[in-house]
Amino acid sequence: MDTGLTTIPEAAIEKHRATAQSFITRVVVLEDPSSSSGTALAGTNRRFVSTVSVGSVRRTREVELAKTVGAVHPDDQLLTIPQHTLLFRARRGTAIALAISDVFAEGSDLESLQAKNTRAPLEGDEASTFKKLLSASAY
Image (cartoon, rainbow, N blue to C red; front, side, top):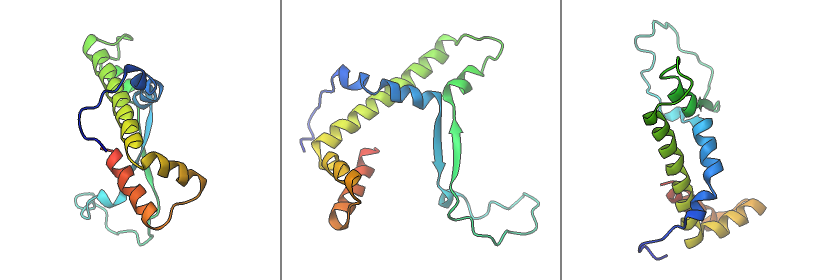
C-alpha cells in the first residue's frame, strides 16, 4: 500500500454525508465494562456487592449531539453561529473519516476480507488479519 499523499475526491466524502448526519443526530455507543474502575463502590454508601455476574451484559449510551448542542440556549429554537459551526464540523469530520476508511479498505486487503466475512465467518490467519486491519481502519 502506498503511504504517500492520497487525494480524496469530494464525491467520496459526499457519499458519507447521510451516515455522518445520523451520527450527530443520534448514535448508540456500547460501553466497555472492563474500563470501569474496580473501586466504583467507594463513597456510594453501598454495603454489599452483588454476587451476580454482569460481565456479559452490555451497557449502551445514546448520544444525541444535535439535541445537546441545541439545549445550550433552550429559549431560542435557532442555533447560534458557533453551535451550527460545531455541528457542521462534526458532521464534515465524520464524513471525511468514513471516506478515509474507504480508501484504506480499498488499498489493503480489508475490502476483500469484509466481503468474505459477510459470506462466512473467517478463520485462522484471515481472521486475525481481518481484526488487525479493521482495528487499523478505526484510527
